Amino acid sequence: MPSRVVARSLVLVSSLLLLPAAAFAQGAITGVVRDVSGAVLPGVTVEAASPVLIEKVRSVDTDASGQYRIVDLRPGTYSVTFSLPGFRTVRRDGIELTGTFVATVSADLSVGELQDAMTRGTTTSEDIVREYLARLARFDRNGPVLRAMLGLNRRVVADARASDAERAAGRVRGPFHGVPIAFKDNIDVLGLPSTGGSLALIEHVPRLDSKMAAGMRAGGAIVLGKTNLDEFPFGDFGISSVAGTIGNAYDPTLSTAGSSGGTAVAVASGLVTLGFGTDTCNSLSNPAAFASLATSRVRTASKPPRRIASRAFSATL
Image (cartoon, rainbow, N blue to C red; front, side, top):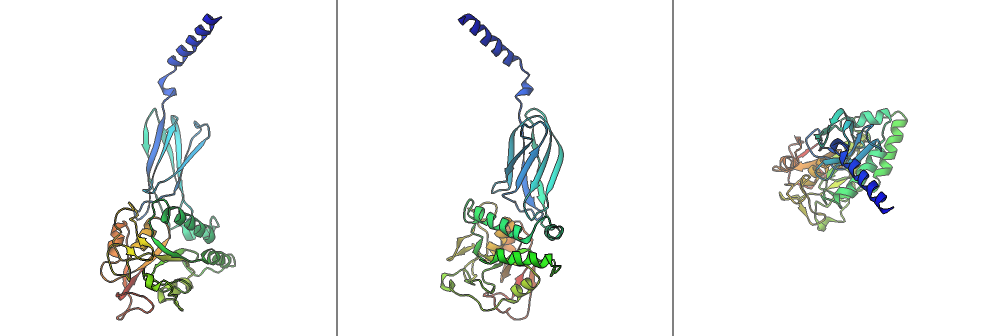
């Protein structure tokens, strides 16, 4: 009896050794996801689908540097889908994996579809706001710890819900209706503190909106919150006594420049759709350059704009 057991074991081992190497070959799909400005996008869901997979679909999320890697994929034809609420879904078809081949599949996601998506009813302002809040919880104070946002609007979900109700009633105020935005924390926004990044002004709550905030609210935009900045805003290192040092969107251990560093990092990291800052001398261009963004510096008047705590005469969208 023992000899028969040994014989069967030998036959089984021999059979395994005779299987083709392709039966064990496993490939992978990897890449980087960015927005159209070139900024990396963490937290994007990437799905690889193929009939050769037992589970049919395998998914991962991009990391803090916008990179992903889906491993242990059987040889076959794959489709890869990139999705993030508020962004246009991108799909790549016909990706062939043979043996241990590693396919590089990257994508650029566009936020230009936000208004179209809300118009079509495929998403809502409330859904987009909740997704941004989830991303803030995951990447701004946890995970990479970017510290891009200094304070959040406690009514933001209610504001987004009201925006959706207006849309359902047939009233769309303009291209920013329902779109989440953020202001540098030296720009007055009614109902939110304006600290200028200093603990000395931690309890300062303005009684009126700045002209920028009032105009964007009138256009239907949703104020998500205030962004971190250099204190008072004076500096080029992204440091405030209220919220600490801002981390670079690509590497939180590196500088963001200033003084509008929080706005630049929030936009580059996909924590808000649109951000406002101010500029005296390179306070917009330097943070934008450090975050691979474009910025627009607009001269507003021949005298300092009202309800903005800055040495600057200009502000930007």
